[in-house]
Length: 490
Ligand code: ADP
Ligand code: LRH
Image 1 (cartoon, protein in one colour):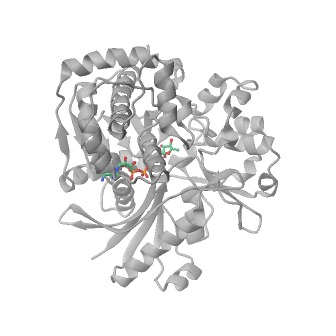
Image 2: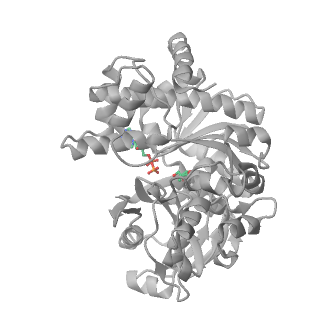
Image 3: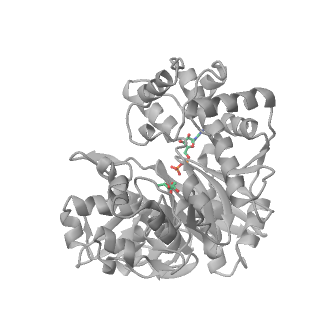
């Protein structure tokens, strides 16, 4: 039976999922899962890009050993990061992690030369300090030798795809996250590149999700002993793939892609690039079939991941289910913080930062592990309510519930508290949203589905959705008012 392969590389882990279509249902099998641990070296934070390529090859070997013939494969990953190729086609250096501190203060520095409105009217993209534009500007300012030698700019999935196929192409959904792509012109923005002093020649042709972009290089196929496999560019930005997999029936719906980040918003036909979008710092990231994701980043489960890592460094290991059980038993509504306070962006001692935030806002810092986790999860749920309200205001739509996809939906407490906080049902599933959206776009490219609407209908039939109805409404309503005051959200 024909199978296809989706590589979904998240900021915390990567996986390779096999997909098959059986009686108009999608069947998936996890072939391979591996950690994605960034590496601190020489005072900088990098992605271990070649280890990721190695793990991707392991998945191909597993497929071969299982006797699976692959009809195609595709890659999606986190956004904004990139590698640079030299003239000889070799990778120059190890890609930086977007949480590296070299972009600190860069965004504000650029605003002195061009106001936010100038950047936003050209890109429609939210201001995040680690956007590619600020990463490149930081490298330029530091006189990076990599930049001097660079011949091509490839984002993470472009780069991994290049290693597999030899083709140097930039995929659209990810290109939009650079804050250097102009959706009106349908191309890289020459004015912005000139402002930051980056040669436009580094940037290649932009291909739409659903384009066949090559096949396994003979050298890769012979190294692994596989045949030649067609490679497709999907929505290579993981959030683009995740939203493609939202099993919504309605045309206009609200979603929360819940993993390392919490990405909340709605799908729109055209970018919303008005003053309110700029003021609320919403983004318009490119999606499949010409759609855009009007959304806002929320810091997400990163804060919990980092806290868990901190306990591990101290010698106590908790699993996510253990931490959630502890949180459930801790006292409710004891303290909160705004997850999007910039102090939580970089790796490090999250508990101390939470305590500091609590002290600054006249709250008693949480102490026991259960209280800390409860504080994180309640703060996230309450922030979801705030951003959902902003999404409604900006889009002019009222949503009767929230679709949640991504690994974070395994946190049933968070799903329930999200429903309680927004006062509407949460429909959770599928957990492997990005990988499934990746598979769906490959099938569209192969003519198995006519379009994303049909793909979503099949996804709906293939994967369970858990419904969380809101409970404890009064208590959460009252908590929301207090949370807004503490977080200074008007
Ligand atoms: P990413 O793609 O950004 O790496 P995922 O979508 O894989 O992230 O989601 C990872 C998050 O899912 C973890 O940070 C954790 O909070 C949550 N998670 C993973 N496994 C479980 C589990 N068994 N129970 C509860 N939560 C979990
Ligand atoms: C989620 C994600 C998100 C970006 C961030 C850098 O994995 O792609 O959409 O903002 O990583």
